[in-house]
Image 1 (cartoon, rainbow, N blue to C red):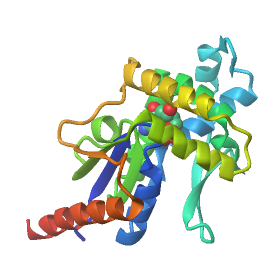
Image 2 (cartoon, helix red, strand yellow):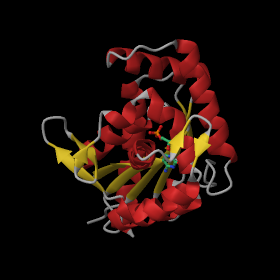
Image 3 (cartoon, helix red, strand yellow):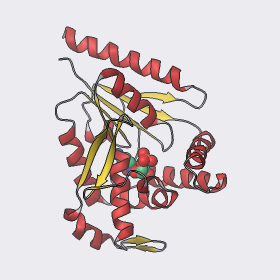
Image 4 (cartoon, rainbow, N blue to C red):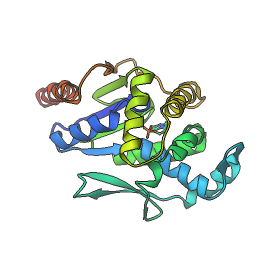
Length: 233
Ligand code: DC
């Protein structure tokens, strides 16, 4: 009753998934991290030798796309869904800097986008969903009732990502993370198929200097207002 679709797009490491997860939980909605899906396809491509430094075999990946099965399984203890690639839990493997380095290059392949967008549209058919990514408000759900476009300065985003990786015990260098953030911004924004851009009707949200609690409060209030309107109409 009165369920809506919430699309959250924006640059990498703007904290989209943290907020989207909280929002989904508070509203009793399903949360879908579409970045995880592009990361899982990237991991598949790496493992099969379709992508490496100075090497990218688009045709081979396209031919193997039908072998890729992606699922989300809800983990009760963690309170969110984990990514499965051909029945294997790859939640950890898809978050490494190595996958981050190749993912933009995989996400620009049209056939990959067509496959994943179709899956995402199917997941959101019943509404009551919070989905985050790069093209959710523009391509996946252009009719979403609430669209948010998140941004923050590259330095702030790199710092957040750097801390996240350190906390996970990865050996990382801040400058390398910043380079990766800037590189992904450039590829994501300039690719030919569904580049990252703000949907005209999206609310822009710069969280460079905003704490998590304030962000959540604001988004939760936006959502409640729109849900209430749905019920009235
Ligand atoms: O949100 P993330 O950093 O996990 O996303 C990983 C990459 O996947 C990112 O560089 C861009 C790409 N992506 C995309 O092209 N479209 C989406 N809907 C989600 C992610």
